[in-house]
Length: 70
Image 1: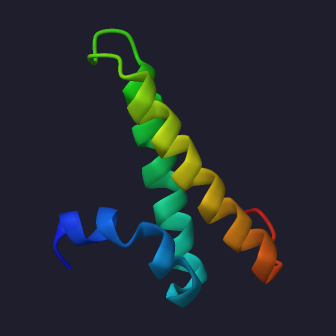
Image 2: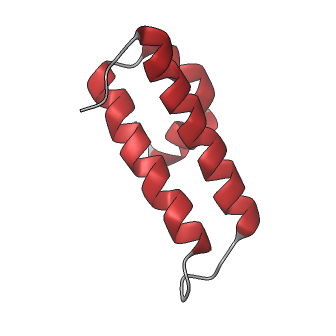
């Protein structure tokens, strides 16, 4: 799947993903959120907020499924 498709369908795809895929997305979103506000990385508060929103959506989906943290 092309990378842009991942971004466009982020929220709609969450219910259909496996737990492993959700965990991968959680790691990806957490990393992007950190990069968006890191020094020397071209800080972007707007991008940081959006990635934190995506991270929360993944975490909420994991909670909804009753998945325990590793």
